[in-house]
Image (cartoon, rainbow, N blue to C red; front, side, top):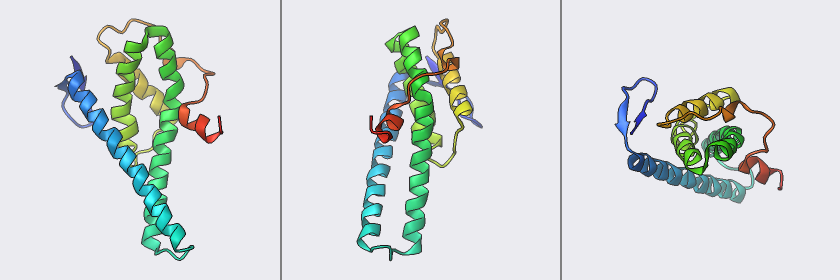
Length: 156
């Protein structure tokens, strides 16, 4: 059993099934946000720069939110890869789901920006949530490859 501890709330028991359902729902919400942004960009392009100010502000805000989400996720990606290599794929999957839930589709999507250090701290907390965590601390290592979003942006 793991516990879901959000800032300002009481810890509550959380089953793996409940957590996975929440991650899937938030992941779908993120995908909808990406599609909505694409539609807004298409509307702005149709108007050849004559789009209303509120549409441009909405586009800019959504772009910034999604970029912050992707940047924070990229900061975690190398550490997740190290968790998988040192602790096994099952441990990495638990950590990935916890980070997905708390970071990528949760607080960052609501506009809270995380620094790389805060993202690493979140990963450390997620690792501590593992029932029998006794492995190394791979999130403290450095020099890993970039995450999937940064690689895609670089054309890799």
